[in-house]
Amino acid sequence: MPQPASVPTLAPRADPGTQSKRRRIGILALQGDFREHANAIRAIDAEPVLVRLPRDLVGIDALILPGGESTTMRKLVDRYGLREPIAALARGGAPVFGTCAGMILLADRITDGDEPVLRLLDIAVQRNGYGRQLDSFESDVEIPELGDEPLHGVFIRAPVVTDAGPEVQVLARDQSGRPIAVRQGKVLATAFHPELTDDRRMHRLLLELIEAERGTTGP
Image (cartoon, rainbow, N blue to C red):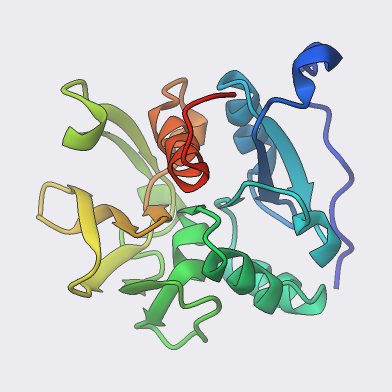
C-alpha cells in the first residue's frame, strides 16, 4: 500500500498577522486532487489544512473530501484510522463537502457493490455513472442558491445519484433530471469538480456553513 503523498507546493500564505482570523478548512490529502482544493480555499481567504491522520482534524472548521479514486481512498481512510474521526467531526456539526469520489465516500448506499464509508448523506450513488475517463465532459450547472450565473461543471468519471432521501436538498440536476449537487444539513456533495475551475461559489457556500455554525459573519 503506498504511503500518503508528500505535502504539495501551494500558493503563498497570507500575512501572519491575519492568519489567526482565517477559517481552517481541512482537506483529505491521501489521494486525489487535494492540491486544487487547497488553492481554492486560499482563494477565498481561508487556510487549507492537509488531513492525513486523525490528529490533523483537530481545530479545523470544516472538511473537504476531494475527487480521486474512491476505492483507493476508502482503503487509505481505513488504513490511517480516519473513518470514525471524520464521522464524529460531522456529527459534531462541522460542515463537510465531498466532490466526485468525495460524494461516494459520503453516500449511505453504493449501488454497484462497494462498501459505504461515512454514510453521512442519505443518497445512493453509482460509481462512474457517467462513464469512464474517456467519457469525461464539461457542462454548465445551474444552482439557484448560488445566483443566476451557472457554474461550469467538470465531470470526470463522475458518480450518478440514483436515489435521495427526503431530508436531502437537491441543489442542481443534470439535463436528465438526476441530482448532481446535494445538501443535507451541513453536508454538501457534488458529482462534478468545482475546484478545477476559477468559480469559488461552492467553496464559499462551505464557508457560509461554517459561519452559520459559529453564529457569526465575522472573520
